[in-house]
Image 1 (cartoon, one colour):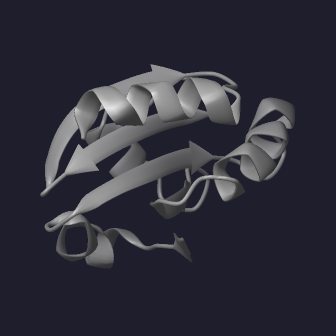
Image 2 (tube, rainbow, N blue to C red; image 1 turned 180 degrees about the vertical axis):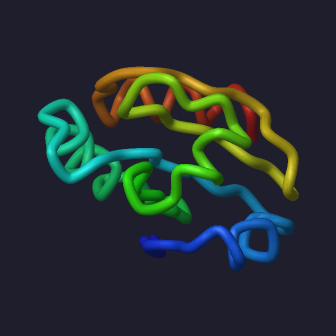
Length: 98
């Protein structure tokens, strides 16, 4: 598992190969704080994007609510879900994409 906190400049380069989960979050968001430990249980590459620090990147992906979790495979957005999810819920979504 790799967890990275990423800036816009590095985003496209990072997700261009392989499978990535991108967590759009904010420090003040309660459900975002609950989601963090669930993501850490996964054996996947995870990018965390703070929407307060990277508003432009959040706009590119139409992030209107947080947490929003985007699933990318080889640079292509495959799915996007909003709100808290358990590890089991996330794993089910991952299995459908992979």
